[in-house]
Length: 316
Image: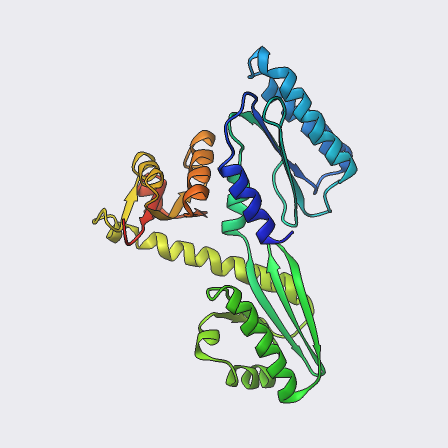
């Protein structure tokens, strides 16, 4: 799926008007067999249903029927996943997102949608451009959420080929000036290609991964390592920034208030630091206000700050 589709779905879910019926949020893990997927959906759904008031159960069952029918007709791709959101009753709603990255099986029934897993995927997974240079051609791929969503192949050799690849990279960076990229090429091609790039393009080059087999999986692993290192670097600066409330705030109460004011630019959350309801609220508030949610695997600085902190927008 394209990142734009996920963004559109997240915006819709984050601003969803309340209705008389609960929202059913279902995540399907396609790494398990289809029969196990159906069993897992049923098991998780009826566990969540037991917590619902009797008056809401009929509408919940109707929404679950929609989810199951969609899954049967559109099973997720292997090594990916599926996110489904449905509401029946007076304010019906349905949204389906096939995912190229895996998710854990989960089903929830609540007033609002459960979007934390989607936000975590988007803000903590790979999004970059991979430029592959060969002797007689070049491939420029956009990688999002674990897979290639766009690919262009160019024929040629020598400097004309490198210029084609450079123009393609410039076009993709124009769409998003902060977009980062990686290069797979021989040492001779790497030197020649980097010689014709602008300084801005070179500033967003993350790494060179060589031109051996298995380029894409290696590039994704390298990018995830880079992203985690970047999050750790931001977390290490927290103690200094938290001395001034104009720069950062910590603890769920303060972070929640800052998000509600639309003053948070980036939320740092330690994995498992908040209860599920608080995580979902953080994801919804971040989506509504345009803040980025970063889940940091391990950080002593972040845990010392209560497991959750945020950077404050400069104008706040």
